[in-house]
Image 1 (cartoon, rainbow, N blue to C red):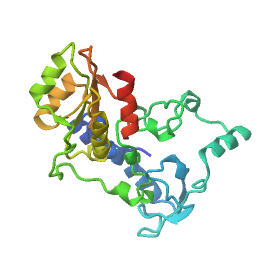
Image 2 (cartoon, rainbow, N blue to C red; image 1 turned 120 degrees about the vertical axis):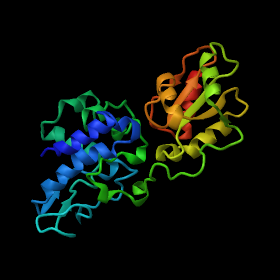
Image 3 (cartoon, helix red, strand yellow; image 1 turned 90 degrees about the horizontal axis):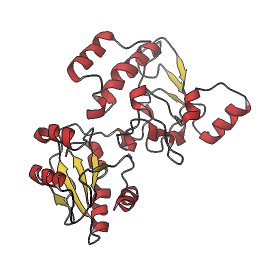
Length: 288
């Protein structure tokens, strides 16, 4: 199956080849994966998937073994016309690999190079030992958003509630231990080769669901670092500030987190998508 050429052309002409790094992967996946699958399933009465509950605890923890597909239609058309079977839903990933090795099943050679979960090339990278297998997919996004839409009907309800850009009517990261930086403030921070104190700064957009998702962790981080000698700041980098943030602050997608060391002018970009307070604190402690 192939995506509709007209749809792909319209997407690329209007937003470029790699818009998913800027505004999320859903639109690209919808055009290139979900709609072709929808056409393919229209000719079937059932389909089988390899979904497992432990693949993505944030979104797949309620996958049943067999179900009436809640999203796609089958040969007869209409609701209930397609059966979806997930035979390994309750099987542990480790047991899957034991079986594959025991039965000498041929597997993609990328698996042995750290690519535990394999998707499209621009959106897949190898994971490190100890990282969850889905961390290599859409690594710049929040962990709860790691689905392309093929299995939307199996997502936990809270993982499907994605706010629309522009609906946020309040600022983020409010706290007495957080400093809101202006454009001038960021420019001054960049110019300093020897700072009196190191800084950690989040580049954010109030409408971004991933920024909203890490708000409590970042506020807690600011509380824990209060009085430690590390300043915690925020910079709203959308709108008129976005081009500046992309050129000068390594902004690729929201949120982007930067650490400004005490004795270096060049900020260090937080490399992980794990934005819980413990992970952020480990990043700060490793650099200060």
